[in-house]
Image 1 (cartoon, rainbow, N blue to C red):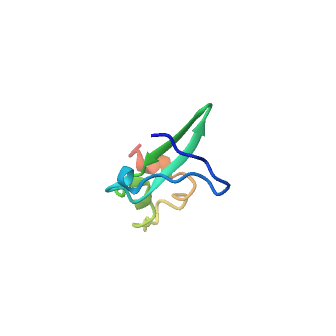
Image 2: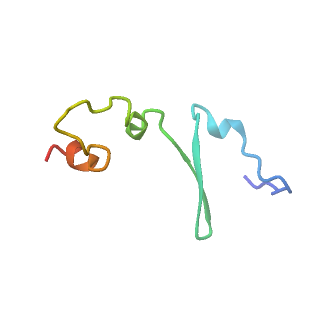
Length: 70
């Protein structure tokens, strides 16, 4: 497919995006990438269950240590 880039940008046909709710658009060298973002990305779950442990007073700054189970 070839399309014109207008003063407001580029139109991507909705048929290319069936089943996709969110995308990341990025430019890498001479490529423009449109990458679907999964709704179940685990990064969005961080912070939903705050740590409530008196022994972990630095959990917000050393979260990698506690999450790795070290």
